[in-house]
Length: 297
Image 1: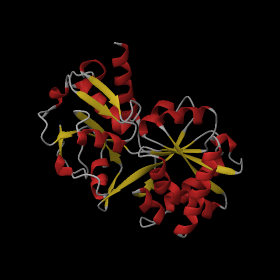
Image 2: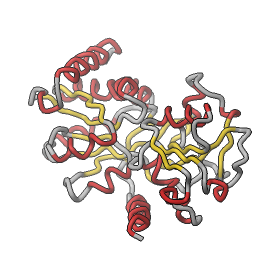
Image 3: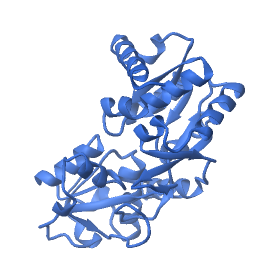
Image 4: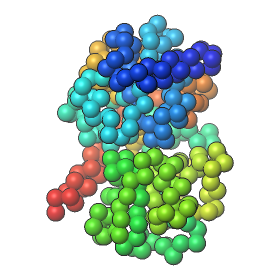
């Protein structure tokens, strides 16, 4: 599908979005909820072409519904979306409650390297006196959201395992709202330490917003993974079927996603190398349990 076509779909979706909630959409539309981790505009740019190719291949109207972190559970509870693209933590925590089904797992794209896992990165300004995780105690620590898996919960678990509870042992444990906001807050010195998902710093550098050399990575893990990271790695985001999507629609959508060639514009716009068979999300559930137990102790 030509770029102009998917842009038209995005514009129409934006117009609908300004007119009301997802429940006001025409029932004939197939709605793909997307966690807008870098804001609404970025979500449309990234996932609009995916909606467009599904619309073309399946002769149905697919639309993107950008969701804030707090919007995801209400959208599932009220059956407002047919599919969901969100972090592994949301899927793992809501899988049973809302009868979710992972149809595929994202294989990330970075410098022509295919990655099925991702991590969290903890960082400070280059001239910071913070050099290790133990130095984070008593400092102002910002995550994306407490419910952000790569941009919050991965680092949260790591700190807990090193004897630091960010909720009680940091002078402030703040939410930035988006990954970009966290990076800029650290850059400006508004907070001492930040955490975002792996690949965020590199992508912001490629967009000319920051320079990697202006930051220092805390607990940097040196391995073959293509992005700077401080935590262990977990399965990438799943493409999830929600209750309103029937079995036949799920099968059709999965087939289209799996058969997209690596150089397809929908994958390139999403920074995805391909969609593959669903990963094992048990490690994600374990991470969430550790954090939940820390709240109760």
